[in-house]
Image (cartoon, rainbow, N blue to C red; front, side, top):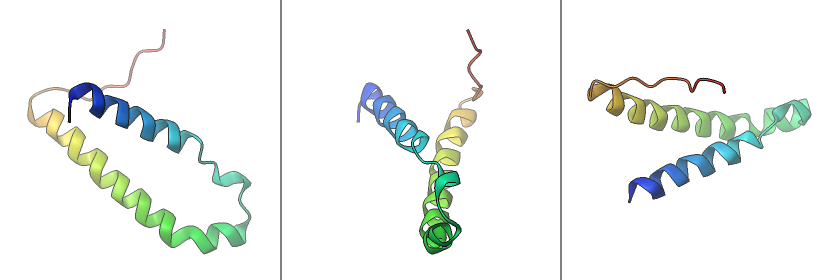
Length: 68
């Protein structure tokens, strides 16, 4: 996968996750989906940690962008 494609896929994932707002879900819906949500969130955390660790292993820092 090219660098541009990887960044585009990360941007798409961020965009998709930005649309998730559980505050509007009923408690019953949230409870019904909690197992699937937990699985997805743990998997996402694992992958993001792996990418960040790979960056840090090369002596670089993962930093928050400075607001313009």
